[in-house]
Amino acid sequence: MQQLKTMWANRGDWFNSEGREQHIKDYITLANQLVWQRQVSFLGAAILTALYFDPYAIFTCYALVAITEMLDVILGRQSRSWDGEDPVMGGRILRRIARNTVLSSVAIGLFIVNIAFLQTSPGHFTPLFFLFSASVFAAMYNSQMVGILLLRLSVYAVAFLCIAFLDVVRFMPSFDSSIWLEFFTIIFVLYFIADISAKFYLSYKERLQQMKLIREENERTKAALEVKSRFLATVSHELRTPLTSIIGSLELINNDKLGTLPPNLKPVVGIATKNGQRLAALIEDLLDMQKIEAGELKFHFKPVDANDLVQDAVESTEGFASKLGIRVTTDFCQEDCKISGDRIRLIQVMGNLLSNAAKFSEEGDVVQVRVETIDDRVRISVQDEGSGIPSGARDCVFGKFSQVDSSNIRRVGGTGLGLNISKQIVERHNATIDYVSKLGVGTTFFVEFDRLHVDNATDDPSGKPLDHAA
Image (tube, rainbow, N blue to C red; front, side, top):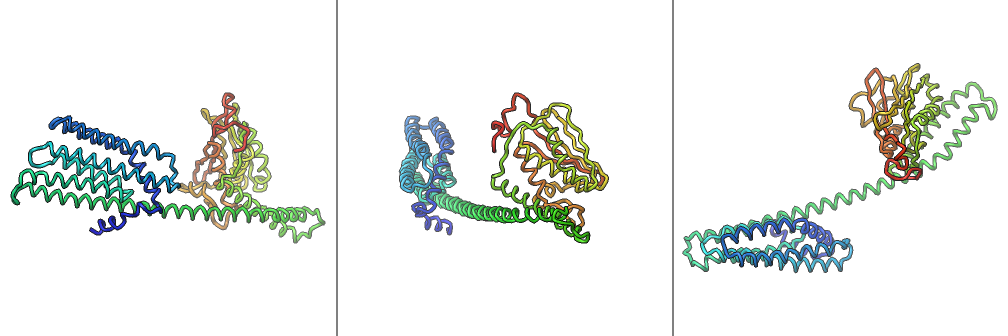
């Protein structure tokens, strides 16, 4: 009963401007989706009853139902251009919905009451079942606007009462007759329909409220991400310029360009230079991450020879590997192994893979880089002889600010962003990055690209022409 009171108290909500447009759009969308389902149901009812009653009277009433149902189809097509922002057009559509509802519900009520009149024997199970089904259907799918729902159910209630009084008027039964039992059963059914209509309406209102909360939370999250991105970009840019000057000055001092440095100061200046370079690498990674999140990281796709790419990457990291006592070997592909990619970004990916392999290897170990073709794919793999990665650590490996070895006794530090950035760069190339590892034996990271053939050398992984910014 409380639900019925709530629905009746909110009967004027659909006239209010706040949220009305969303209710109207939901109603029209659902009505268009279900119009043929309703038509099939009524056509089936018409064919069934026409086998037992006057088919002319049955199909005449069904024709009225079909015509009024088509009014909703026409309204749905004419309302497609409405974006939900124009309240004047929204009010016009709302009035047409109300008019169509009256016409449709009256036609359906006449169709079903006509069946009851054609049935001369007591009891009207068939028309009552059809009317009950129409009422439940309305309760389920017209709950977006309580006013429209009440309007349709009111017409159906009149039809219910007409059928309920039909046998009472025809037969004038005594109070102990089963006709009165059917009469009171119909009254109970009316209450049941009203109750489930209230439940569907309140459920719809609850869903709308949940969607509103989700949208608000989404807006707050986007605003927080925007603030975070601006903060990272501003801080990183502000730090990068003075830090570059500091690192340059320290390198000049460490290399005796400004005079001979006392021996006892050289280790201190060397440590400061090294930590400055680590901080600079962190800033660059933060800037790349911010650009990726904002969709501002640019790519220039061109045909790239995988062998040349690996050669350049190995040469650029050779000094770093030598300092750690790591030897890097290469095994190049003997076939044509061109891929489509941004050479600078792919060098960045390979640099991350090679530096990681060197970091987690012991002095004297060998890191092997291999280029090979597998069917129509080109695979570049980096294999180390380190301690390996434990199972279940994939999210940690490719996550942000995370490393498998997060202890304070790592031989070489890192930002924990390299592999995450590499993964996003690789995925932008429509490629895949993954690894296989065995504890105590080593790890092999590999990247697989689509092999670029001569006949498709004009397209990048996104299907756009090569040599362009994306």
